[in-house]
Amino acid sequence: DIVMTQSPDSLAVSLGERATINCKSSQTVLYSSSNKNYLAWYQQKPGQPPKLLISWASTRESGVPDRFSGSGSGTDFTLTISSLQAEDVAVYYCQQYYTTPRTFGGGTKVEIK
Amino acid sequence: QVQLVESGGGLVKPGGSLRLSCAASGFTLSDYFMSWIRQTPGKGLEWISYITTSGTMYYADSVKGRFTMSRDNAKNSLYLQMNSLRAEDTAVYYCAREPTGFDYWGQGTQVTVSA
Image 1 (spheres, rainbow over the protein chains, first blue to last red):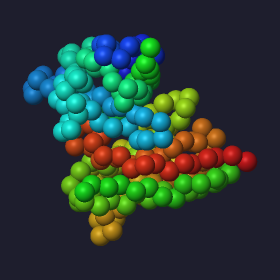
Image 2 (cartoon, chains in turn yellow, blue):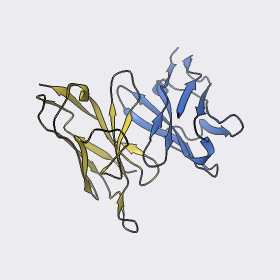
Image 3 (cartoon, rainbow over the protein chains, first blue to last red):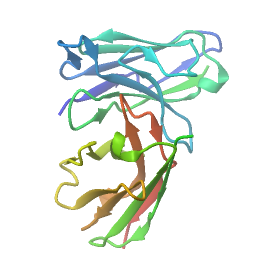
Image 4 (cartoon, each protein chain N blue to C red):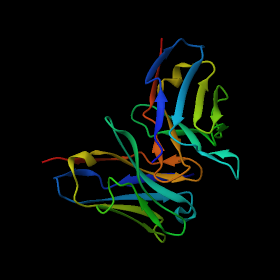
């Protein structure tokens, strides 16, 4: 199984400042034939299911604000919130869909400092 | 609009059974990979099974042999038959659609396994 490791477990960021979340996979999630990374990012607020923010490591879903961006390739990935807003307080997860079983990172809790 | 609605959760004793349902609307369920995913405070998000467009099912090792997924194309619904339930199966269970990543999720149904 591919193990997804997120860091940090939690972070507190001032409003308007940058938040950076890291995700490392135990093996590559890059398909060489397509040059695509099978990596997604989710946001989950209390009492709600996760919401897909980014797929293919860097493609924002429709309606997702452009302050959210994803980067990385192979085994190392980053989700960046460029200017933290109050509504961004949530837990963020990475997930690989490169192979079965699908696996998620442990989550990063983002709070306001 | 796309909607997924789970039902069937509840309280069950260890060793018991439960059948979860997921009713889809706004799209044809059989056109997508569909998964069941569960979430606990301690273990986070855990994928447990999916069904492909051709009807092949895959399961996580933690539920293999105990849980069975199925699909009713006429009802546009997904099911999860859970047998031999254990305390560690206690979780919120979600169904989710997977084109690339899980783009739509239901609101979840709580399953509690306790004597």
